[in-house]
Image (tube, rainbow, N blue to C red; front, top):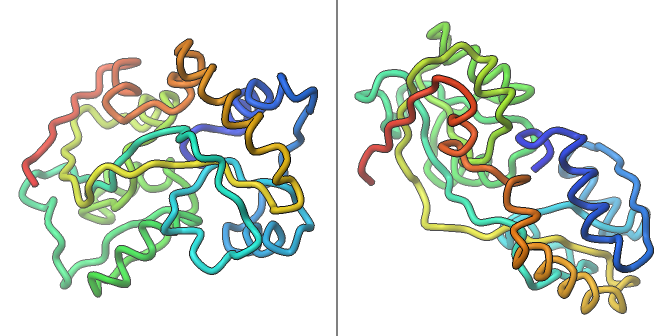
Length: 213
């Protein structure tokens, strides 16, 4: 989730989650697959947030069962007629987003990786690429700084849930973490950390138009 939320927001959210456990977490930013392998090996302790599909094969990890966020995968475009899964064009995906990578592979699409969502929106605005395949979680600053005034989005998946994961050596923490996340969600203290695109767009003059499935 880090590319959408920003490091400060990730750290603030995790500190809130771990505070009742008297644990002050530190963050290490790594390429996705390398980070998950280190986590599976027990060299790091937890992953901030992933969907189940991204965690297949990492057998040493335990899911904290209360979801952090709900989202869907979308195709985004500046011109509504281009929001289609055209195998003849190159679609953008953001580095480290396993869901987008898996979707491209399964749909046999040509997908080009960009470093972050800032680069992705810049490429869309300058017509370097017609579409972006990504989930609908973005930081307000990124959206508003892009200069895009209107964007279209078409859903590609049903609603998905993201969960916090820990290495199995920390299995004893899972009940406490579950309770902590639930309490924060019940008090509406975490939701603003995981804003949807439409929520982030409220911070500026960006118009988001949702297209039919």
